[in-house]
Image 1 (cartoon, rainbow, N blue to C red):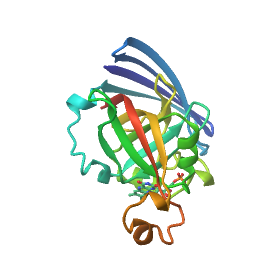
Image 2: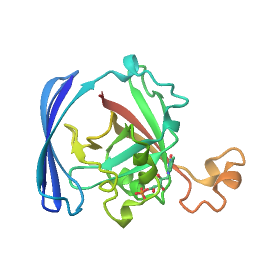
Image 3: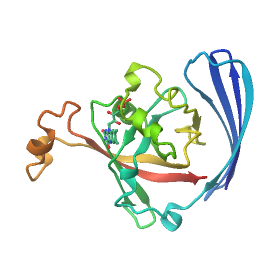
Length: 220
Ligand SMILES: Cc1cc2nc3c(=O)[nH]c(=O)nc-3n(C[C@H](O)[C@H](O)[C@H](O)COP(=O)(O)O)c2cc1C
């Protein structure tokens, strides 16, 4: 179980938040404290308290979604660490097991032209998240972090798992992964006419395939 309390201080043009939580993992109970900072935005001086509780769950036993359609619900992929992070919308992916029946894994496909790709290459862990508000994936899938802190506009506040992996407090489902392997596909890897049919003129480049072991999962 993860019970969290977020105290959000909105002072001047800067927004900071602190999350206190207790996580029960196979290794035992751990307290976590994380601090997030959103972008600048001319926010009026006000202090708000936001309370939430998030439940840790076992993806292999309790994940209820259809793996064939879940990614079409448009998830958010976030990569980075406590010093830097970026996120984008993903519409493709896979869930299952890899290198062991007890090793749940998530596969995502990120084109090298995405700013998030640079974070996936540099950092070991990432999160995938689901949100109720469709404006989140609509915005995060149309704007690039290269042009500024894009999480601020849809009202997202970054927080960190006990491993320091970034996620957004507003997510109703968070799956944390540690990258096991990254496959930098080239045209030669395809056995059919996919490069011609799909990638001709696709400026972002052939997607890199990342397989991440699930190391944590939380839902509201
Ligand atoms: C519904 C939707 C699904 C998307 N799925 C993917 C995907 O699976 N892989 C990918 O590389 N880009 C995907 N994109 C494109 C990126 O989300 C988009 O280019 C984003 O602006 C990249 O942001 P960044 O430059 O900050 O990384 C998707 C976009 C939308 C709107």
